[in-house]
Structures are given as structure tokens and as C-alpha cells.
Amino acid sequence: MKNLLLYLFSFVLILSSCVEKNVKENTDSTVGTSFRNPGFNADFMDSLMVDIITYVGKKHAHSTFETRFTPEFRNHYIEMADDFEMKEIILTPDSGYYFYMLRPARSLDPDKNKRGVLGKFRLDQNNKINDFQELVNTPPGNMETLLKSGKTLMSMLIEAGSVDSLLQDKNLVEWPDGRLYYDKQRYEWRYVDAE
Image 1: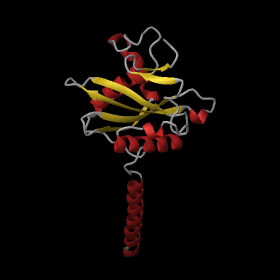
Image 2: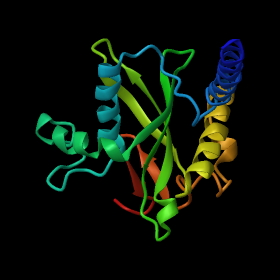
Image 3: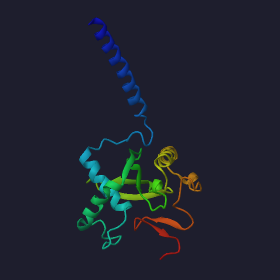
């Protein structure tokens, strides 16, 4: 009986050390293995996610850039939420927020059906988004590539306050480019010669 107890005790110790090692390895503070949340509760985070999708996602067929924020279209963005994944959101020193999320992308390769979105915004006194801007959309990629891209882009944004030095790297940045720019009034990517 003593041997059986000793064996079970040894087995539990070995198993617990393996589990503890796995937890430590999977809680690294890099993009993709953890979510940095600036103290938002779950309900607020869900609502904020839908608000961000309203800026980033495809507009409802009957909405315009002016009406997409009205309550009649909110369910459209709520239904889209399962296709988006927030990877990182952090509070900046000037009380704004940076974020990196994954969104659907059109791609012929089924393993590359997502792209990364790097952006920033502020919250007003009523916790509503203002001063929203998408900074970068990555090329479509697989999860490993998108997580690495997010880590690189977010690190540069945190360190320098800008990712301008990375805009020419086509492995990291698909937009903005010579054809597309982000229109801060319409909150959408526009072709340079479109008006």
C-alpha cells in the first residue's frame, strides 16, 4: 500500500510540473499568446469589440459611411463579431488605445482567410469611441504569420508612436500603399484617385 501511495504521489508531482510548465509557456505577454486588456470588464469589452467592428467591418448593404453607426444597423455588426478576434488592446501614455485584431480577408488560400488590423482610438467621457483610425492592414496570412506581424507592428507602435518606418515592408503592410489611404472622415480605406 505504501508503494502504491508513493507511486501515486510521484505521478501527481510529475504531472503538476508538466502542467505548470505548459501554463508558463502559454502565457507569454506577446501578441497571440495573451490578451492585454486595460482593465475592461467582459461586458464592456464585448460592446467595445462591436463598436470597433462597426468601424472596421463591411458596412451593412443599406447603410452609408454616415449611417452605419445608427442603432438600426448594430445587429449587423454583432452578427459579424464571431469572425473577428482581438489580439491586443493597450492603454497608451496619452490615454488613447492601440489595438491589433484579426478580421476576415478574401483569399483563394483557405489557410490565409484572415488579415491583421492595427489601429488606435480614444474613448470619450461616455466610453464611446472617438478619434478612430486604422493604421495598417496586413496581407492575408496564416495564424502564425499574422501573430508575428502583429507583434512586430504593435511593438513598433508602442516604442515609436508610429509604424511609418515599416510601411514599405509588404510582408507586414498591404495598406496603406500608393493606391489606398485611410480616410479619417469616412473611416474607411479609399482609392487615392477616388472622389
